[in-house]
Image (cartoon, rainbow over all chains, first blue to last red; front, side):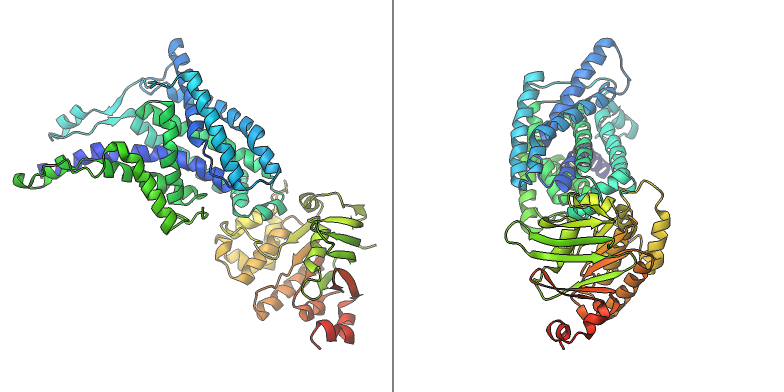
Length: 337
Length: 234
């Protein structure tokens, strides 16, 4: 019994808790991608770097607050800085829409032109962020680090294994739930939200109903900027901020959006967790877990790790390719890519 | 002078002219039907009235005002409702949300209009929480007409409202359209089912190659031997 308990706690600590937090971060990122796809009909490659931009602003503001001695301990100061990050990112996104995408919309350019433009924007943002904050790792987590410490858990339960539950993980999960609930309320209940869904569903009919495309596009960008900043900040609090990592995040985020069905918000959330759990379960070494469960003589010799963590991106890639081959509309039947 | 009138319309989608000196007019409380063989420019004529293509010559007047320079969206705001032939509902949204989107431009309380639509199409009230994409063809058409009615249009234009529905549903739809016309709305529709449509029409336009061939009351067109022979199958 003790062994089964140990095995489950071990799995929770190294797989379930981190994957849930990571899944929430991916879900928020994928929501931004999926909204833009649903309304503007293109895959926004700049989303990862939009996250980096928003997080960068949050970090600067956090540092400012820390210097002024403003904080909300035991919670991280970054939470206080998020609204500033969101506002700055909204401004940046609207300016880039004005400079880059609006022109293409006017010309009724095909989606691929938008996609290539977004790649260009991605490089610009990438350079901008590196220039402003540097290419290295930035830590901006302060306040209480743990909700539950590894040692405390062991003492409380008397098990050999413990669970460490970081504040950043708890915050991520709670924030994700709140943000998703707010987003779905917006899309399902408000006039603007419904007009977004109508526009995404049937553009021509939305025009016939008097829905203004420019307004819908603007709201979409504002939502996407908000989601990107929150997702980026939560990821940064959890794992540290480094511009290159955010660029790399693009792959799992797209995989999540595609697995769930592009353009479908519910799918983006499901996709985020599918990708996160796949990445973590495939790259986790099960040796210790199995050792707890089987008689001593059966204990495995190898690590029982399917894939080294260095290859975790391969997991999202394989899932994405399989989904595109077998079910291009994704789990929740979004738009075919 | 008629409430909505497109006079001497000539134009097309950019290339060759599809309409040649075509005139269509409809008055309030009246049903006007455009019939004709395939490729006669029936839908094109209606789209021209709605501003969905450029007219080189001719004029479009609504209630005595020239609206030739207005975009389709602006014409909706001026009191024109349009029901496209296909993709005319928001499939992923509920029936009620479809109607709400129809009333998007209205700032006042539109619940009264929604009641009227539900009175007209009782089945929609029953299914108001269901996604429109899950409804049958006939019910979808009712949602589409209902959506257009939500703006309280003065003119309602229907592009083949009975395409792809069963004869029973077609009769039912035509009955509803007559009811709508009785409330004082001008109705202009394009129809494949020429016979049935002319039966309920106050005014009929037979188009051939983008020009008016016959224009008369629905009754007179039905009685006209040449129209019967050429367009109504004897």
